[in-house]
Length: 571
Image (cartoon, rainbow, N blue to C red; front, side):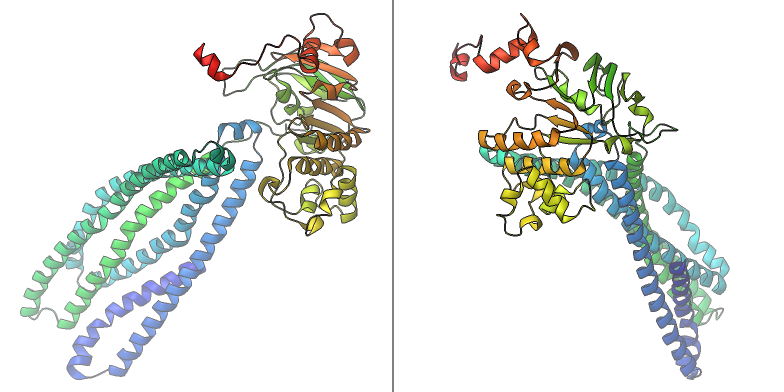
């Protein structure tokens, strides 16, 4: 509202400057009268115009920055709250493009484009009012060409919006290609694929360039057309006025004011044509933003959901089936049923693709079951609030995720208000304190993106310390030691043993030697539970899946001689 007041002052002062042309020609230049008054009026008009221009620009920019801050916060919060299926369907580059590039276009529309639209429209209104004040009939004639501009304005605006949407999609693709190459830089270098990745990036960049030039072509087409129409109107007015001045029906001052107002109208009209193009670009960006905001998470609290109490008795899978909605609807899990007693360690084993990770992802509701139910102490987890459910679960995975922050902040990620003493206690329990004290800033050392400045074993021990500090009653370990060397595995295994004490643990492990002491072992095959029992029981079953897997790992039973790929190809 304050910016609008400043714009009104700007428009009024612009009109006053044009109106002062008449007394300059008719009085000041001819009779030298009212010189001081006219000069004072000019100074005042320029001062008010400049102040209005500055205040309106500053206040609209402030408004735009607030809008972009709010939209970015809303968009980021909405995205980070989505389910795992949402992220599986979209690339990181695509989501980053929405949060950065698209929101920036909206910010430009609010702070710059909308400001120009209001300011120039008000100035145009005052100029038009002055024209009608000086000669209403001629003003009407001069503006007969205005409707001719509307059709190309609308058509070009539609083209700009289409091209802008395509350009934003290409921008997403560009961000995706770059992010993918940067995150996989070691693989790129190892396979000597720098040139290939550069070619991929250039191909996408060239496509973005072509689309951007189409947008530019549409944006720049309208101003010359409007100038041509303006020139025709000006030529007609000059011909008409010359006759009226010759017949002494109009003074030179009135002619000069009218002509000045007509000239001054061209700049706002030209700017407004660009404003339309910018608005179309912003509308395309806003459409994409609100498409994402209208995509609601598949996992949300049910009406009437209540916080769930900490686990005391059992976790029960009751006829659980699951299939991914965006795939061929094939069941990844098929009528899975088993019960885990509180405080037990249960191992989940099977070949790759058996559904092990999908099964444990259902417990914290990264996905919701397709059929059946998962019950904690008899309560369906879908009837509990997501926040209270996930507060009960700590997760340690093979692909350790750490953040570009200090070691202390990473350990305290789930408990931001944790004291330094409790952070250090968790680190000692996870065998992380030993290497932390050797670092330059100890617990205040930054570890880089995804903890790249640390070894794999060090990263895994920080993840265990993070889970220890959270102190949740349910623990999920997803192949937490499968990628470690022997020495690191011994330290991590000891840390995991401490972590699992007095907790209900579900452990996925490829190395079956690590699950011998499990209270129960669940064998999955093609999404179904085939065997359940302890290690000593399952390993003695003739033709059992677990016995076969164990024999293959421990004794290499049934394995053939390794043959180089080159020989296989020749064969």
